[in-house]
Image 1: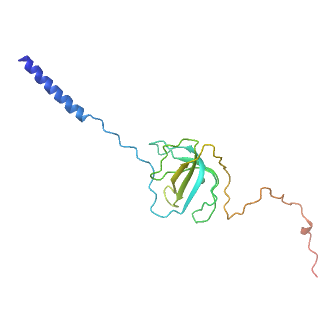
Image 2: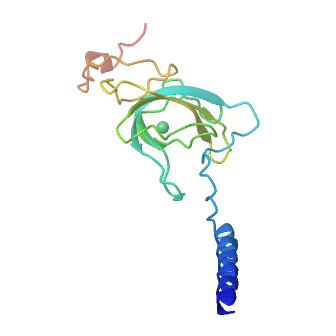
Amino acid sequence: MSRFLFALLLCVGLAALTACSGKDKPMDPPAEKSTGRTPPGRTPDGTYTVRGEVSSLPTTGDKRTEFRVYHEAIDDFKDKGGKVVGMNAMTMDFPPAKGVDLSNLKKGDKVSLTFSVWWGGSPPWLVTKIEKLPDDTKLVFGKAKPPAEPAKPEEKPVEQTVPSKMDAPAAPVK
Ligand SMILES: [Cu+2]
């Protein structure tokens, strides 16, 4: 009699355990998809390829952080009006477009990146392609030389400040 009761309890217990184990299986957390943004569905106002050094990488879940790169000058960078104004070397945020993988990058990496600009967009530009460059790549961080502004010679002649004889009153014209 008590034997039978024990077996019954055991049975119920096992059934409960089985049910439990089936239910409590932890759900897989949602996969961390690329945080990249979808580019606006219009032709970019400009697309540029520039080399630079990775300054910082975004921290997952922290929207204040962004992919940031110290980039070389961009001579052909166009402003909102389409005028080539150039962009000096600077550290800048480069939000990645969807599908751009940052996972193999680390701070200090040399990269070549391609980004497109959509003026008025939010953000106004997105990185569409990143290529890693060899670590010994020499980067030059200087001022942009947009073609609109003719390159000046390195050594400018000293400006003459003393009045020359050209400043003397002109001889009366006959
Ligand atoms: Cu910039």
